[in-house]
Amino acid sequence: MQRDQIQSGPKSMRSPLRSGYHRVRTPLGLCQAVMDCIATAAKTTDRRREVESRLAVEQDKARALAGETAEMQALSSLMMGHFGVGS
Image 1 (tube, one colour):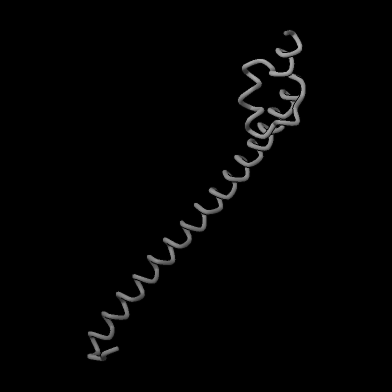
Image 2: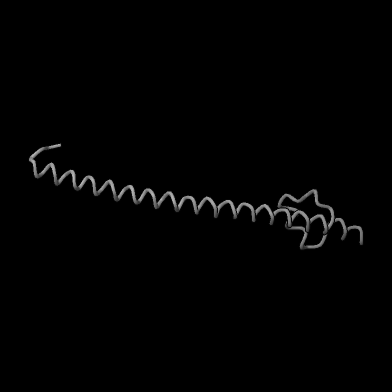
């Protein structure tokens, strides 16, 4: 009976074992696998924050360029209208 309990593992280990940790044989091994996943998730989160920051900068640049373009088009239309020139 004790052997069956050891082989089946505690309830807290069963769910992670189904999630791809089937090679983990001990609670310590499971703990290490979970810590590795947490470290990987933290790195991914850091990379995502960096990319989102760069995206925000580029979006600001795009908005500024769109504003400048709209201003130039408005001035162009005004000048063409003033001189009676069609585009």
